[in-house]
Amino acid sequence: MELLRRSLARLAVALLVGAGVVLAGSGAAHATAAAEIPAATDGGISATVTFHGAVVPQPYRPDPDAAFGDRKCLLIYHDYDPTPGCGGFKLDFTLHNVRSQPGYTAGLGSTDYWFNAYADTARTFGCLRPDGTFDHSTSFVVRTAHQELMRTYYLTEANWVLSTLRSDPTRDVGPYFFMNFPAVKVDCPDGMTPTQYGLKVTDISLTIADDNVFGHTTWSTPGPFYA
View 1 (tube, rainbow, N blue to C red):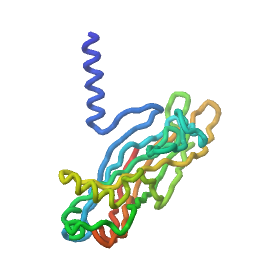
View 2: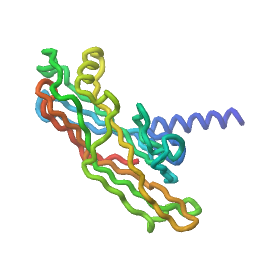
View 3: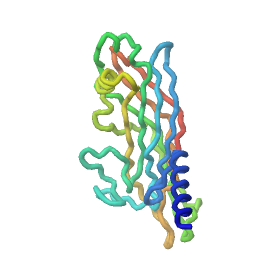
View 4: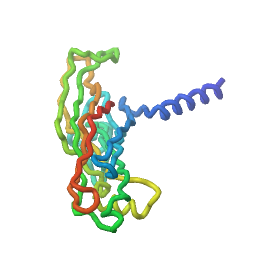
């Protein structure tokens, strides 16, 4: 019987991972989803954007001054992840057909240093009743429009992308970004618990102004992505 229980537990975890959802601490859900962005012109560069690593704090008790722990909101040195206290998400872009561009075959570098990424976000907050159900009468939405995403170290450098493509001809790569949100004040009646009910990310775009390889290009998709 114990062996059966362990087998069923392993099967449940495998099914969750296969579905792209892994349950994490504090009720945060890590979902993975992707969208394809076609090239603007024939023979141009297309992109795949992947949404993953989302942190939706449940309960929501952020500490804007905490650099460690479950209420952490501050990013420390070489910290490129959404925090458990304030929440956020990651966006990875993979660029396709770069090796076919004339500037790439000529061995040119990029004239623009960084890729930049933007998105609209909507975070729903509110209060949980003592039985754990969400009280929709307490809900409110915090929206941001065309918010610039945070860079993941050197992985957003245009010439890093080119160098990686040249050193590893077997795979496509692109820049990586993340978002760590600022804290929001959520007031709940006595006996109820503040929570972030959900996250919606829309109108995602990646831009660069390069004269050699990538062009003056914007890749965009409406999404939406949810967590």
